[in-house]
Length: 252
Ligand SMILES: NC(=O)c1ccc[n+]([C@@H]2O[C@H](COP(=O)([O-])OP(=O)(O)OC[C@H]3O[C@@H](n4cnc5c(N)ncnc54)[C@H](OP(=O)(O)O)[C@@H]3O)[C@@H](O)[C@H]2O)c1
Picture: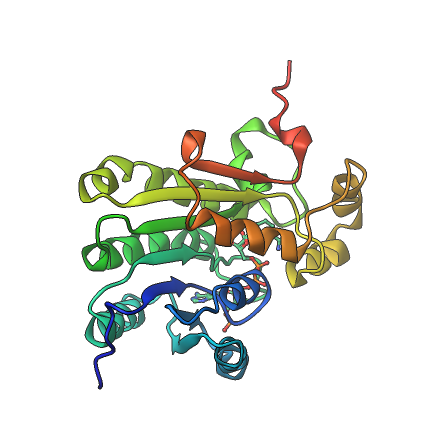
């Protein structure tokens, strides 16, 4: 495999970038001095379409299929990135799971906590000082401990994503010794996503309840926020909030 001159380009991995939020985030990274690695689980055509969009916009991209729940897949993906580029400047930990119809009990924790921590451990040695890790989550997960009502079926996802966030936050001191920065981007339900359409079918009242608090963030707004989190100064508490202002008001 040809080794790309990585000094010329910032290399950014976006997990779960074959559709929805990950895909929109990846498209926004299109620039001549950035190479975007599009990770996907099985939808290779969709991932390739995102690659094509980035190249058409003047950027550089490639797709790597890897089920993040599989140690072998993730090790191979990170190995490929290391061989091809020699480094990784930023990672967007976007991929998430647990709502799939066929998900086994325990899968949510495997993908949303264990897989995130494993991938992070593998990429950190490739990241130079100044590298950045952005973890994407939902307010329903980030604020899980507040005990707010959740859409039907979302409890295991909320708990496991919060567990993943906590496990990554516990690594902040280690990231610090390497000069790597860590940011969480947490959003309310994002309008226009497949997941919100799915939740709306399962539990229309839960989505209507969020809509009644104000306008939900759009896909564009959320993807913009993730891209900004790759470069903006690390915010207080390492967290950027998008939408759902009522979550930010402490309950009395
Ligand atoms: N949707 C919302 O309203 C909302 C709100 C706030 C925060 N978020 C957060 O934003 C992120 C993205 O959400 P989304 O709604 O865009 O998700 P989504 O539509 O379910 O997209 C999932 C993406 O992740 C990939 N993926 C799923 N399981 C994977 C695995 N085991 N290994 C590798 N890739 C895998 C899928 O690839 P394939 O297509 O190839 O399977 C797809 O590209 C999540 O972290 C979510 O918690 C979402």
